[in-house]
Length: 339
Image 1 (cartoon, rainbow, N blue to C red):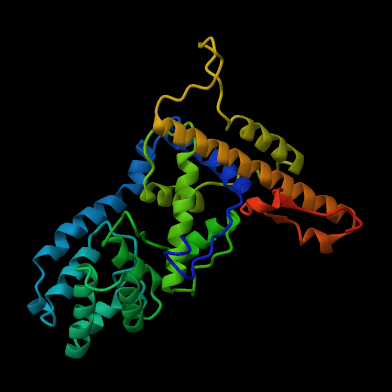
Image 2 (image 1 turned 90 degrees about the vertical axis):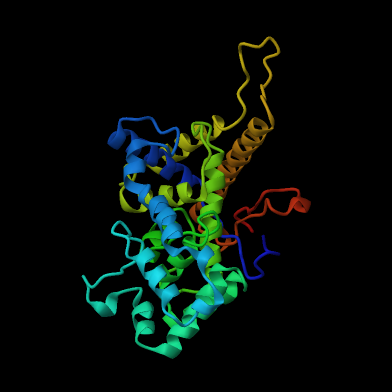
């Protein structure tokens, strides 16, 4: 991953917080849909989130990138196609009307290009190369950024409609809120850049990996499903367990962790775990890895609080999770009260 994006740094997700939010998510989905959450093919999620897939599919048809020719650059055809894709009635992924005034529109670069032939040609050349994959996506991002300014939802929308398997729309304030909730220190607001956007995508991928590890989810989880999961958490779920004591939370999370491991099939005489195929094997391994991460978080929090109780806040700030370095022989670096 670091080799693919040279400036990418893994953003540590607090698995305990993510686990708690997932429990809240399941409770919320049951409440609003009267369905146990087992799949993103859920009537409530479909009603609230499927519009993004429809926007993507319709944008592909509207844009008609396959019919673009080099001679179209500078004619206004490419800008007009993009504007139609953005102006879909159901599109709330960016502000593209005058309800907040023309200056608040996030597609105002397109409006400016219509009245400026030099800008029009320059922008259409960038878009032609971007959607025809004639240049790197990083270069296209920076080229558009230089023309549009740091209008994150606009840039993210352009990338989303290029590929919904690689890229996602972005509402910075909304995602900053949920990232903070799950222990991520990434801020997207006022931080529009290629590296920031890639970090955002990688975080959503990590959340997708977490969701794939959940035994109760029986269907595939797409990158867009993971985006919807975070979006629903950020906008609609109330933190129902905010009054639960720390001890109760730890107890509940330990119980959750215990149920993440492979359970033996008691119907078999051997009593051993039953792995049906490679996909099952991978999923069970993911569950075990997630259980390990949950255990690490519990011990990490315990060690920090123990040192604070000893009056050694200085040492508590040095407690680290070191499980990524297998050569060390331990997972948590901590101290006794003497240091």
